[in-house]
Structure formats: structure tokens, C-alpha cells
Amino acid sequence: MLVNFNEMLNSAKKEKYAVPHFNINNLEWTKYILEQMQEENLPVILGVSEGAAKYMGGFYTIRSLVEGLIKDLKITIPVCLHLDHGSSFEKCKEAVDAGFTSVMIDASKYDLETNKKITKEVVEYAHSKGVSVEAEVGHVGGTEDNVYGDVFRATLEDCIELSKTGIDALAPALGSVHGLYKGEPNLDFNRMKEINENLLIPLVLHGGTGIPYNMIKKAISCGISKININTELQVTWHNDVLTFIKEHPNVYDPRKLISSGETSIKEKINELVDVFNPNHISPKKEKNDII
Image 1: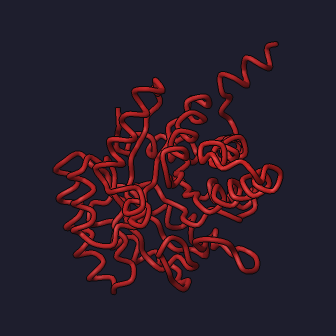
Image 2: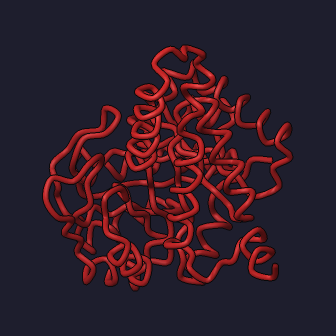
Image 3: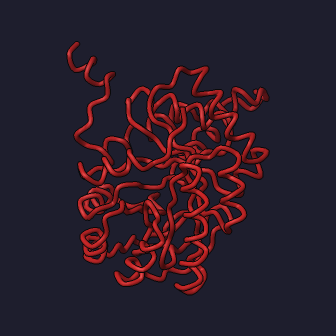
């Protein structure tokens, strides 16, 4: 069963860990993520960008795919299906109507008043359907899946204003970027902590790829409850598939080509989960420790 992210993120905020948001791009990736997070016995947010939705056939197709995998794979963990960087009220409504349980409205490219107006419209519609809402203030820099921008850091005042729309989580831009970093990450931990102390809702870190793990842990200690990962899985998968093709130049079965990256994706998820939630011990790890 699909759920919104409210319970999982509020628990993370209270207990000081982060829930992983992994972007999905196809059936295989969705399957790998669900299987690994089920093994970890932890909740997960499946993020879908507008670009991925178009590639995969549309919002209804994705919702049906995810629900089918949950049933066939006997997934029992909480799973949230989330529109990542919804560009307009119309796109968010389309995702909600298709059965998504969470949406992000990204009106951060507009001035604050316009951002608030659009966000409030999304909140009112989504909440009437039991769907959670994330919003963004400031500009997360970088380039990823048709999301472009220069870094413009959020202020505490703007965060407080946007939170008045009734959103369930906020992504304040504090120095992270989408895609791969050029240079060193420069996160504003002091402002992150200040925003967390002044807002009741969970905070979200976009552009988690490439941030050193010690900085990820510090961000969580400063109030981050949800971390978005996309490019890191893409690079991990790409490297293993490239190696497989070089070693097996005559293999053309797409199932073998795509699945050659399965192990590395699952290992990367396992590694990230240990960073996001260091006090968690998965049933498999616990069993192995006992043995």
C-alpha cells in the first residue's frame, strides 16, 4: 500500500535520521530499490521527475507499476510515491489524480509571493486527497533531469513565510546542487540548524549525490529528515553496465545488460542507508551478526 510521507518524515525528524528518496527511472530500478529497502526493513520514498514520468509512459503507468511490484514482491515497508520538482499546480494535480501519494511543488524560480500562492493552491488540493506536499525556497543549483539553476540560499524569513502555506516538508536551498559537483560542496549548516529550530516541519536536502558522508551526517544532525539521491545511483549503475558491455561485447539481451548494474545499485543503497540511519540494524545484518 502506498502512503504519504508524513509519518515517516516526522519520525525521522524526531529521532534524528533521514529517510532516503531514490529517483526511479524504469521498472528495473524500481524493483531493485523496493527489494533492497524491504531487506533493510525501512520506509522509502520513490521520486519521479517529470522527465522520468514522460519517459516511463505517464503518471498512471508509474503508479500501476509501483503498486504491482509492491504486491508481486510482497513489499510490506511503507512506500511513498512522490512527484519530484513538480513545475506547476497542473502537474501536481495530474500526479495526485493518478494516485501519487506525495508531490513536490517547485515554484522557487518565482518571487516569494508567487511561490507562496502556487504552493498554497497545491497544498489545498493535495491535502483534500490525503497527499503530502513538499516545497522549495531559494535555488538549489546544478543540472539534473531538466532542472537547472544557480545557487541562491534560502533565508530563515522566507522559510517561515513559505511554511505558512501548510506544506508538510520544506527543501531550503543551502548550498547543495543537483547532479555532479564541480568543486567542493559548501553547505550552510548554521542556517540549516537555525531553520530547523524555527520550523515544525521536516527539512529536505536535494542534491545529495557527491556530498561527503561526514557532511551528510552533520546535515542530519542539523535537522535534515529526507535526502534525495538520483545521480549517485545513475553513475553507479552506468559504471557496472559499461564494464559488463566491455567484457561481454556479444551480449545483446536487454535484461542482462540492464540487470548487470543491479548488485552495485543495491550495494550503494545499503551503504547510503547506513549513513542516513546509522542506528538501524537490518534483519539480514542482525542475522549475519548472530551467525
